[in-house]
Image (cartoon, rainbow, N blue to C red; front, side, top):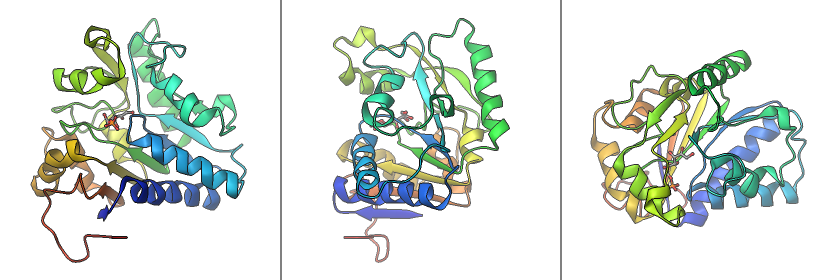
Length: 250
Ligand code: F6R
């Protein structure tokens, strides 16, 4: 379940290769995608693999995990903008197969319901990619989010708003709410890969490794998943016990 690599580049190669293999094995795969700084080198590697070895992506479907409420696709810090910048401008998946929660929907609750229905209609994700917040959130499912939640509106914690303030010019610009895919939808993915890199993730990864399954630590739900892999670089894994076999590719 845990894989530790030496560098961010090793982690990104491994994760991108898993995505690439999934696309090659099943041309109509449904991918659950994440944003954030952890995923940037992953998507860069994936694009490199697809350039070296072009694969038909016209039947892929994607669902992104989350979006800030109030930020439209043209906003440079929206997750929609991020996805086109890092992946979709190059990866030509037909537009109708690309799904992102609508942060500017007039009726956010209805938008959440529609997102849930779209995920259910297609039968859920084949492969779900996740990052992790320093407070253990997955998607924007903050601590204490019920494990049986589906796509919903969430109030971001102060910790998350501070962590993500680095992407905005002013801390006050960080949205207070977001739409996120729910934990139940993440759990229903056939396979999950959670990626954590860098020293800022070391404390939460140790908590995750040692802790019980609890709604206080949303990522802990992955311990109940049949096919979840947690991939880290050495910095994120710095506080984990060193065990033979835990380290892959070192
Ligand atoms: C973003 C998402 C979040 C991030 C997490 C880590 O779509 O789902 O859970 O994965 O906040 O973000 P970074 O990678 O910027 O540390």
